[in-house]
Amino acid sequence: MRGHGFLLANYVPGNSVIHRTPLACKFLLVVGSGLVSFLVVDWLVSAAVLAALGALFLLTGAGPQRLVSAVRPVGLVLVVIGLFQWWQLGGPTAARIVLNILVCVVAASLLTATTPMQRILDGVVSLATPFRRFGADPERFALTIAIMLRSIPYIAGAFADVRDSARARGLERNPRALVLPVFITTVAFARQTGEALAARGLGDAED
Amino acid sequence: MAIAVDNRPEPKSLLQDVTLELTEQRIGVIGANGSGKSTLLRLINGLVQPSSGTVSVEGADTVRAVRAVRRQVGFVFTDPLSQLVMPTGREDVELSLRRPVRNGAERRRLAESALERLGLLPLADQSIYELSGGERQLMALAAVLAVNPAVLVLDEPSTLLDLRNRELLRRTLSGLDQQIVMSTHDLDLALEMDRVLVVEAGRVMFDGGPAAAVDAYRALVTNGLAAP
Image (cartoon, rainbow over all chains, first blue to last red; front, top):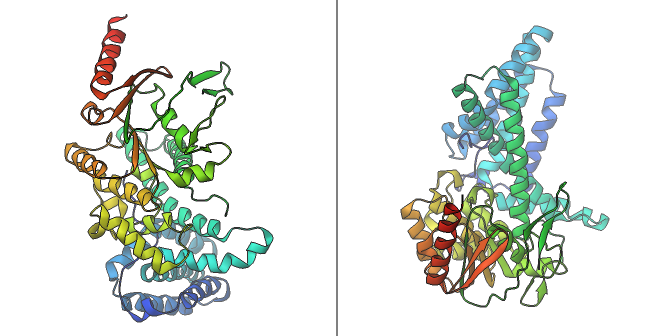
């Protein structure tokens, strides 16, 4: 299977200011970037925020190529959204919406490129700990995030494989030949993942 | 002990009349595809539960004490990609250690040690998709061994590997202290075991030394082909 590039940038070891920034600040940056998409109404502000985040990403030493790789998977979707919004609401609104989505992707990539996954999971566990009094298991929250991050590129890879198979059989215009195999692969993947986690005792209730 | 699938129009037994005590250090399970090998292995880890009879590991019942059983029994799947959850090997090994080791620094140290033991430290931060099949399988093995299980169950671990990677896996397994129970189609590998079970149509047809077991399996296959 191919197409496994992560939607967000993988961790790049380093010692930049961003690497050393506390996890809570980076979490806040991601949350803040999400809020930007609701609050900012001027596409120029969105562009400025995106430029600032892009500069911060380059400061990490992860390199522009990794930034491009992180954004590329959403490129086609953004083009479709942008064209539709342009048609419906005009250029400035379309630009603002597309830029705001990019802001979210780059902010999240900034977090994942400069923070080891285990640190992110530790952070999720800390955030979820107050819910323990309601019977929640914080480790399960972390495991859910980990599986979500793992599943997105896997399903993207499955779609790429199925699309190639459909093309080889001359069925690229048949939506059933695309959707059904991806659906079946995804369900099989979910079962396999569940079984693998169970075999490793991950996701079991706390002792 | 028996295991059956009852929610089909015609209930089908996957394994039946199996009574085994597995005490040898290296135990192989051979048999045709669909014969019940994987079901037998999954019973040991509690992934599959018997519909009648009992399975226990070191006194812990796989139904009543499944968590205790899974702490003792590590399971390696045929396809490491269905087992590795995290983007890199290091992160996956650390994931295995999250429950037993709360301290992050200690977890990182133990993960490094587990990777180093299998010579995987240089590959620890590579994406699992950039690794070869053998390296991936070893990475999955490292993630399982990190929690130091007493028993290691491997379901056809070499099926997807080329000759070089098979050899790499074979050497790694031969250096482990854990009791190993492994299903395989690799008869050379089966010959290196202390005891081999031949499974056919949900029954253990032969249980004994490796050379005799491989002969029995060959005879079974030959007779099966001659039958029609």
